[in-house]
Amino acid sequence: MAAVLPTRRDNPFDPPPDLADEERPLRRLAFPDGHTGWLVTGYALARAVLADVRFSSRLELRRQVVRRTETDEIRPGKPAPPGFFIAMDPPDHTRYRRLLTGQFTVRRMNQLRPRVEQIVDEHLDAMERTGPPTDLVSAFALPIPSLVICELLGVPYADRQRFQHDSAVLLSLDATVEDANAALASLTGYLAGLVERKRREPADDLLSGLIEGGELTGDELVGVAMLLLIAGHETTANMLGLGTFALLTHPDQADDLRSGRVDEDKAVEELLRWLSVIQFGTTRTAAEDVELGGEVIRAGESVAISVPAANRDPERFAEPGSLDLGADAHGHLAFGHGVHQCLGQQLARIEMRVAYGALFRRFPALRLAVPPQEVPLRDDMSIYGVHSLPVEW
Ligand code: HEM
Image (cartoon, rainbow, N blue to C red; front, side):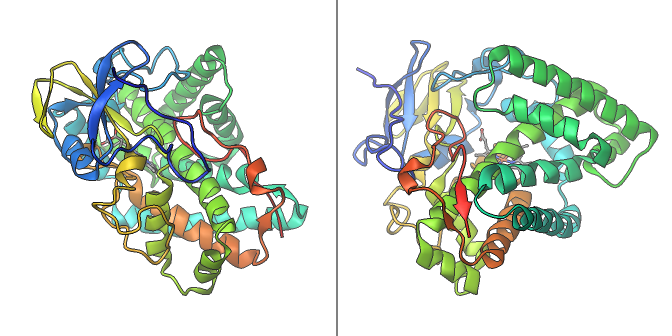
């Protein structure tokens, strides 16, 4: 009989112990709606599925792999809203992706770096002013990605509080369906207004760039902006929160990072691999019968790809279970693979490279303010991490 996805962890950093089975990198999985699909835990098979567009990303075919709160507008079983291309297949996906890639240029990313540094410094200054103890999630890990997305989209300063408030509710842990729906409606309204403003007064930001291209409708622009917000905010925030927790419990490695003994870029890749915050992975649905790993996946069957298990596959990574900031983690699947591979990965890397280093250099004595077992974990959220991280220095 197919089992449900294991979600119970033994410790904060390792995936659930019975998630991976080296003998069976592909096995049957019971989905919450009663469907029997598949679970991929091996690295090679995970890459193969993600690279194969016969495994569809369309939202209307998708199933939840664990039960979680969703909004009425964006949820599996319903077609993706205009612009929400993470849940579309080629050629629809290709059209948006091409337009967006044209906006995520090296030039724009380089322009954002000094702003990221400034945002990080401002938050470190504020921590210094208020003094210890503080919650690193609300003081640092959450606001930084949110403000960086404001920079990217060109959200004016005066609007940032409203924008941050709505997006915080939409992405919050314990929002009810009603609250999530209301926040989605409010943000949609805000973004529609922003698009109109950018039409009248274009600036050097992503939305203005897309408007200037003239290929997307107002609804599509709103959908794209919403996707960037949803995909780019909690992911990066939880990497910052959980990554800091990991470094605080591995003080030798934090020292190596602070003193420059390990390369910051490499360290970020290893943290991405080891932590794999997309804890339930991503899901695809076979659009036709496909042979995979000696099995036939029938058309209509769903396949859950476990990113955490694939990133700990001993066939691919030496010592996959230990955190070693100097190790070679390249090729990890934390940003996915194939046509949907994370569009924002260069930006996320800039944020992490700047933030971890600056935090540990500013507060060399940074430490947990509670015993590690008291740090509340996001076991039940699709993006894993810590709810809060009390620290002192
Ligand atoms: C550490 C932070 C991040 C992680 C771990 C992450 C992870 C991922 C993963 C695994 C996917 C592929 C999903 C799939 O195949 O179904 C993805 C896609 C995507 N991500 Fe990220 N992401 C991060 C940050 C960001 C940021 C900062 C942005 C934008 C500013 C962003 C925007 C997107 C978009 C737009 C897609 C959809 C791409 C497509 O469908 O072509 N992400 N991300």
